[in-house]
Amino acid sequence: MTETLQDETREAPTLPLHMRRDGFDPVPDMAAMRDDEGVREVDTAFGMPAFLVARHADVKAVLADSVRFSNESRRAFDAPGAPKFSDEERERMRAGNLLGVDPPEHTRLRRMLTPEFTVRRMRRLEPRIIEIVDDHLDAMEKAGAPADLVADFALPIPSLVICELLGVPYADRAEFQERTSKLLDISLPMDERMDLGRASRDYMADLVARAQAAPGEDMLGMLVREHGSGNDGDLTTDELIGIAGLLLIAGHETTSNMLGLGTLALLRHPDQLALVRDDPAAVAPAVEELLRFLGIVHSGIPRTTTEDVEVGGVAIPADSLVILALAAANRDPRVVADGDRLDITRDAAGHVAFGHGVHHCLGAPLARMEMRTAFPALLRRFPGLKLAVPFEEVGFRAFHFIYGLQSLPVTW
Amino acid sequence: MKIEADRDICIGAGMCVMNAEEVFDQGDDGIVVVLEADVPPEHADAAARAVAGCPSGALRRIED
Image (tube, rainbow over all chains, first blue to last red; front, top):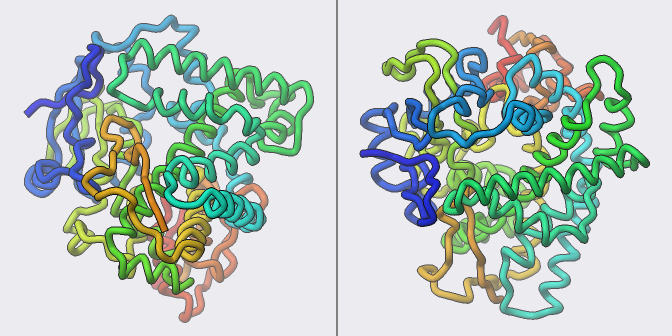
């Protein structure tokens, strides 16, 4: 069987195996590949060898080893089928992108951001998150049923939170939400997505310039004040643009899909929904289980091997792409019993939904705080929440780099 | 149980604080601070979870 990572034709591409889903679940072929082979060589349009890794232990081992499994995409871009950029443009695209650099460069950037995402810092944000959630619930209640839970709840809440945190005008949301959504849609032609990437950069460049002129109390202002003075080791303007762009995308595309898909998953399991609604102690473990079960980030950033390696008994040559099947790994029977079943009472803490290793999601504490607030608040406000259409009519976003829903019509 | 943390390796993910806030904290820089290197028995399970769940591998159990 062959898989295609990218497709430059106008038709929707064939989905690579690790992105194929059957509702919430990785397709049976994916589960079988994990259980039988564990590691498989697959084809990519880039024309360089690629290996799909699906077992939980192997995925963790790869993610934990940033020396032999590099995030730097330089090699991937040198492959014959890769999109072409000038060295200057490539360097600009790389600047500040924490997901595209390895230690020690990664460490330097990440250390500037870690103070902003501590557990204590998140607790200080909690009252504002509660307020934002309540405001959106008020608006839904006032407008009356039915509602689209994606457009009215799941997307705007994380968007507003990251806008306030970062210092992005919320008035610009329609524009950047649409751009990001298309940027991450692999069914769109590569050149269109590259143009969107450039537009996205231009937008962030403008915000960074404003923050440099008058740094505010938000994260952009902090980065400019504390790390943007042109001293040794400080952030360049390109790096500021890269960091801000990444945080904006990561901050609203991920949690929003968890809120939408997570609500649908709970609606399909009414007994578990009732637990999240009625038992405050059930909420935190439920969020971990939803993260595990939904595995919305299909694979994260592919790694590139820096030397000949062996993964799960399979020899992988240097300069190969390694794709991590995170959703399948989260259901690996070696680490989780009956993993295809949603069970919010289980201990799901070992999941790799936020990744593992040095690139483990920077915003995980924020995402957890948002979900732990939003799910129970929604279910308490609308105890009779239910689907407004048959389940079969709910549209999943199949071609998106991050799994989610197109919309979620609900009533109460 | 005894715990050791490597602050150079730590990425400040805060998983240890989430798993065992009696044993771990984060400094203002977000980097791990071990509150109880000699883990009291009542927090041993939580500390073990924190060691297992540390994404960067900064935590080590040096004695059972």
